[in-house]
Length: 267
Image 1 (cartoon, rainbow, N blue to C red):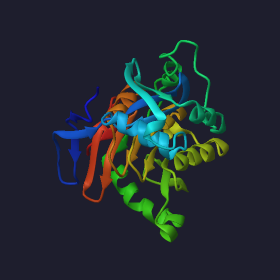
Image 2 (image 1 turned 135 degrees about the vertical axis):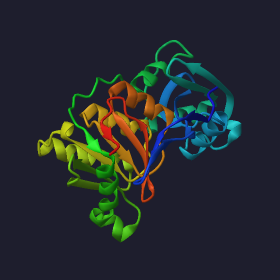
Image 3 (image 1 turned 30 degrees about the horizontal axis):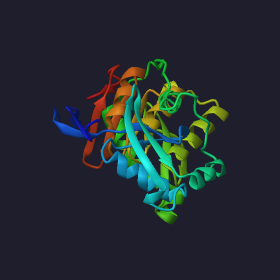
Image 4 (image 1 turned 135 degrees about the horizontal axis):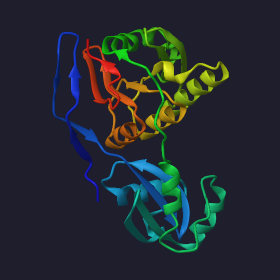
């Protein structure tokens, strides 16, 4: 099984200097859940205590009423993640058709989740952009974003996603209680308004897991800066797509974890 963290050596940027430092980054993996050989969902989780997760998920999703409803659990490794195959009692299994996430698996028992894992991490094409942006511009734009988080000022419960020009002008902002939703809203707005994603960078007021990188890379945004942490899978996908990934973009500075095209200028 995977370790819960990996060691990386990001370039630490501060207004007065920059240096390389060893940091631990949380790992995340796709876990396909199967019930009686039927694929139910693919969840992104930390790669430890997987069996605990499958039991708790089964209960809170209303699939089982108690641990005695689970007759067997088998955790296995697939090419792109892990599979948790659960055997549950017949009465609980009948409930599965009430859940919107339920999808029929393939015939071969034990392989039902592999097709779902393929969908969880789809291949990415290289981002086409001539963007180069100053680290200071990215840093200052994140400091300016809070003034535009209108709904979050009222509730303190919403994430924001923003698109910023290379000169630091915040062109558009969208908010949502879900970090993924906020980014989807931003991309939808940019598509409607025909804003070219290659000409700027995105800010998110959350951690940066692989889904956030995948959304930006799919749309063609070349630089993504997050206010909180990132994961090793997010960095792997960013490298593959040629996306620059910045984390911990806060008042004291930011950590440039991934910059395969050298888009971030440390001036």
